[in-house]
Amino acid sequence: MPLNAVFYRSYADARKIPSDNRSQIAFAGRSNVGKSSLLNRIVGQKRLAKTSKTPGRTRLLNFFLINDKYYFVDLPGYGYAKASESDKRQWGKLVNDYLEGSESLKGLCFLLDCRRDPNEDDLTMLEWLQSGKINFVIVLTKADKLSRSNLMKKSREIEKIFDVKPIPFSSVSGIGKKELMRWIEGVVSNPV
Ligand SMILES: Nc1nc2c(ncn2[C@@H]2O[C@H](COP(=O)(O)OP(=O)(O)O)[C@@H](O)[C@H]2O)c(=O)[nH]1
Ligand SMILES: [Mg+2]
Image (cartoon, rainbow, N blue to C red; front, side):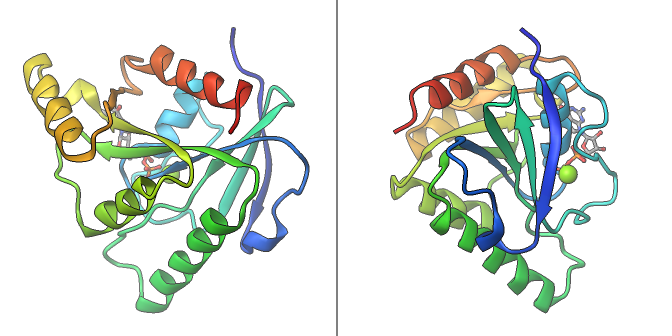
C-alpha cells in the first residue's frame, strides 16, 4: 500500500511541535547520508523531502503527516563541516530538545552511509539511542554502492558493535524499503 504523505510544518523550536496523539517516527543522520532520498523513496514521491547535493540546508524539524495517522520527522542533518560553531550549537539544542522532550516520539531510524565509518557525532547519537529511551533501527544507506559481500561485511560489523541488525537500504534500487516499512508499521501500530 502506498503511503499518503503530505508536508505538515517545519519547526525551529521543539516546544512548538504538534501535541496531538499521533506517533512520531524520526529520521536522523549526518548531512548527505541520504535521508531526504530515503524519505522520498519510502513515500514514493520524488520531491517530498528536498534532496540536495549541498549538505546542511535543513536546519529545522520537518514534519510530514503519513496516512493522516502518524508523523515522519526529518531531523536536521549534523556534521556539516562548513557550518559555524553557533549553527552547530543551535543544531544540537534543537535536536536534543526534541529527542528529550517529545512524548509522541516512538521510533527513530538512524542512518549510516554503508561506505563510511561512524564518526564522533554518529557515536554520540548511537550512545544516546542505546540508553534505551526509544525504539530505534540502524539503516545502512546507499547500499547500491557496495558489492553484496562488502555490504554483508559492513552489516555484520555494525551488528557486532551496536548489537542491532541494520537494514541495508538504497533509494536508487529500493532495496530495504519493505523491511524498513515493516519496522515502522510495527512501531506505529504498537507504540510503547
Ligand atoms: N547511489 C546512491 N546515492 C544516494 C542514495 N541516497 C542518496 N544519494 C545521494 O547522496 C546525496 C545526498 O542525498 P540526500 O538525500 O540529499 O542526503 P541528506 O543530506 O541526508 O538529506 C545526493 O547526491 C543523493 O543523490 C542511494 O541510496 N544511492
Ligand atoms: Mg536532506
